[in-house]
Amino acid sequence: MTTLTLEYDSQNSIMQQLIDSLIERGARIISKKTEFEQSIDEFERGEITHCDNFDDFLSKIRS
Image (cartoon, rainbow, N blue to C red; front, side, top):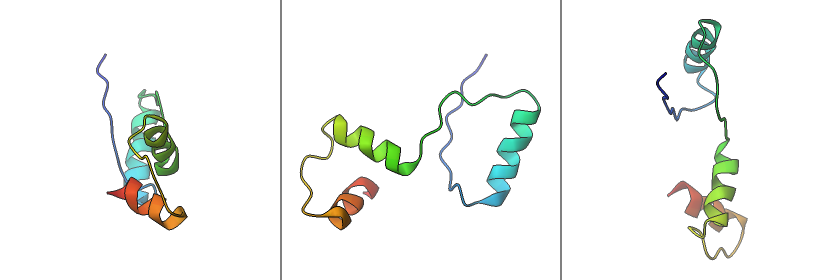
């Protein structure tokens, strides 16, 4: 079995349809995280160490 990691815009309906089609044909989701969940993980790992406010936090997690 091969594992493939994808990163895509969840608002992209074509990508969502493609993924739904793959799932219908037997693919399975192993892990699904939003950008916010990934950002929290980065913070917990110490990759983000200081933020002045929430906007600063968002700018650091997107860079």
